[in-house]
Length: 241
Ligand SMILES: [Zn+2]
Ligand SMILES: [Zn+2]
Image 1: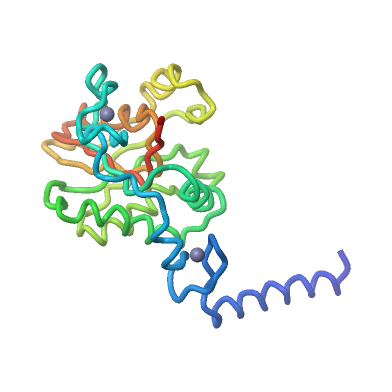
Image 2: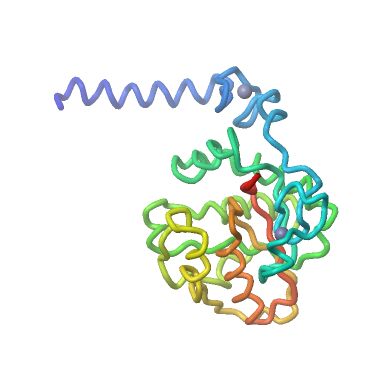
């Protein structure tokens, strides 16, 4: 690249940065102007809510608030689960932008969605545990999305965030790449706790709950190390209907 082209590129970047810091942001979804945050009020209000009729154990929607068949047959190792939104358009797009494009500005919006559900229950937990990411993935991505979410949620719920008590010992195949019946085996033994958690009541955080196999395995490990209760909070729940 020529010197001129190079300096044009650098200047272009500086110009963009300067513009971003003086102009109001535009909505990530509709590109209309929005005064604060990443989404305009209209797009925010249109996000697909999970609703109150979910399974209390795994947040599977549409069970009329009853425990779903899957949880009756094979309950997960976590005790309860919450998600503000359904994992469908455009929440899926937002979560992908958050995870894979480093749109960390979405973390406060996601945390606020969870806090609306969880704030009345906040005294039922002693701490938040972000689902750990394996070192390799952390290296690729540069951050752990669950920890970024946890930092904001911890502030909103006034709970400490324990980011060091649990590690991921294996870089497992991404769950999304596996058939559902292989997912439990894939994550078995994938976590390791380095702290005693005697009697702790924990809120385990992740971005999406699909089969819950990874969260269940992490909850099992936390309980093996003394946690008395492990509940789950995610940004979005996949819906099988
Ligand atoms: Zn919008
Ligand atoms: Zn369930």
